[in-house]
Image 1 (cartoon, rainbow, N blue to C red):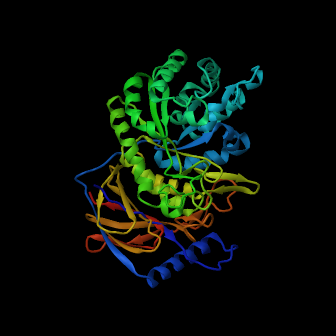
Image 2 (tube, one colour):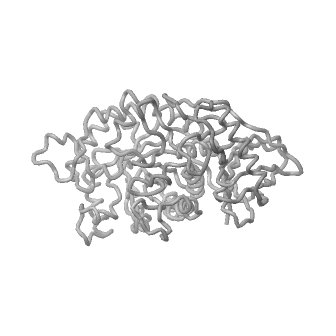
Length: 498
């Protein structure tokens, strides 16, 4: 079994004036972290790559975002699209254009030309229009990303779906569409009142098949997606693949390791920083998706987590929107990649985001985006995961990728909230390594986060600022040695000799 370690750099600085410049803020952070590291005990970890057992290859367009239909204007309106596209393209420079999934709970409340319907369908509140389709076309044009478009299956009918599918094909263009996803989280429809209490997976299979039979003639072959399970029915996803593989472009599922409404502090799903940083909150993703990935490969169908984030029901303030989410997301993306999955779409919500929120004076780039950005740098499309072995009781992870030019990226993530680390990386003959740190004042920080000395704090247009800070790590005695404070992360890039 592959063990791994996580690294984040946390800066214990008290009384720092918020008017300090980004460059000096980073310098103070690094100095404070170094002093803090020296002043406390630390453990030593020796990690060794296993080149004889290479893992999954990182696919193109692994990263993605998931946006509710009601938030299309929020991110893709004309006056905001340039900023949204700039941040997405930054992720896609090495990863490939991010996948844009439009769906969520709002998916099952959408109707084409809603005002024209009399009487209006009960519960359907989101009006789909040509203007909305054109905004999505512009988003696809400017980012290069393909769209997964949700179709109302919860309250809708195939007859209601047809006008939206026709409009999307006409106004967005089939070349920009990866798939139409029929329904969102049908395994909990009976909790939402869109199906009767005894609704079961057999009912679902029958209804989905009937729905697909009606809309399929509007589409080229294999342009549908599903089942978008989120709970107990996920175990039936392989059966869904077997039944519908002839018309599936992508298989989707969802997961949130924590739940915002959970009040029992003893529950493993209680939304706390401690629970978010447990290995189980990241490893669960690979465990859930792996059986479907294996079957999907048999039919040449990609399988991806089309909707995830830290805590369902909108996230939890102080957990989902702080630096802890940077570390969690970084580890989680590698876990998902290790399963052979096609990728992941981080969902938006009131207290979390996959990326940023627009404000009067510009944008606020959220902590989770920094984790996505470090993953994009460390896991470029086409690189291969290399297992790393090490032994420790500390809550750490180490991930490594290697490309065809023998450029290695090693991500160190120290999820432990108390233990500092000295990591010794045993590597073959190498040139010097370049170290880039992901920094924040504390695990609970929402601001003053920087990656390699650059931050988006105060940005009005999605362009980072600051002074890039990358340090050289010497190769001595067959290893690189990296010091890491507790609750921190870093990326070591090394050119291995041929």
